Length: 468
Image 1 (cartoon, rainbow, N blue to C red):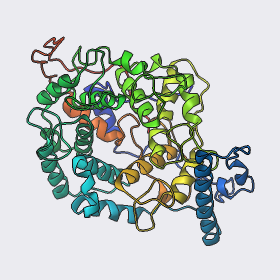
Image 2 (image 1 turned 90 degrees about the horizontal axis):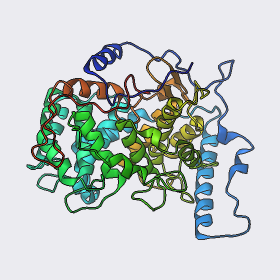
Image 3 (image 1 turned 135 degrees about the vertical axis):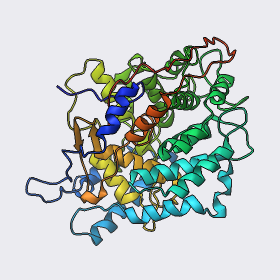
């Protein structure tokens, strides 16, 4: 019987320790490149004669959307043709060293082109650190300490983290900062987070209907609920009333398409759908979604010709959705199994993993390092992070005890597995929970619905190992 794909959201300290002890030994027993029975690399999907039949057909009705789609397909076809001319064997290569150097440089120096991201500096830390951990490149202790000190300067005196020193606290950089500190995983990193004030900050954003604003006086959308739930679960500050009514508010964002919108009544979107679904997984309420409608929507977002994912219906492929969309499939696999779908595959997620790897490796790599949206676009740290995250998901199936790898190209293309709920490596999730579950949950300090409970609080969802 297929073993449940389970997550760390409510691990006991004992179980976290058990996993932490296990991860030091190899467990990828079923690792292999994509090859035929005689060891010859499997022909690439995009090399087949039938591949062109997957191109968009407008049925004689040309629109702005159809013209843009055809143009993207033409550019991608050109990229594939160039690869065919330069390589006799279908062995796409991940440019590990180039990506490593690009990320490494970004930790210390950014050009003036990044001035527009002055209010997103914790995000830059997260995108770069996460890219390095997926590439399994160590972070020098001195660099890690410098990142910790910088993020400490981004922490607001009233709780939460801002986009930069001296700015207002905001849930998005708070999520990025907490994830970055968990990736570093040192006592110094954990000690940066003021958990009591972080809880106060979350309460200051909580709305009567269960939603959260992104900052005081800011907008409400499902991203904010996910960011709040994610940081609260990782740092063990969930109190009995903190997320009261939040589940119902997130459920109201699922629309007729099957995906989730930013707020109730709008169009389904990959980023919002991931945020809402992952938030419900942490709370243990993902079964309350219309799972089959959600599955139908997300698998329909993988592009037939390109192999990558679009974010919404009738939109273009984008490398970042390699995570935001493909990351939903492990969550849905687990949820549907729990819901009684026992005949799910024991070897693959419910999307074309090889096609996604082809798109990322052939179309999204800058030759000098960094990854991008699609051919013709510029590299950036955002797309580098989420393309690598999506590539990892496409390579790894299962959990610690039942693991299957599908590595397109050489074995050197293999990336570290990630935890699809938090988008950091699973051992870092375990380590953070080990640390914070030892600490009492802060008192609500007079917030609405406060109970004053100071025992360790664990969400209801995942009770064992994570998927990889």
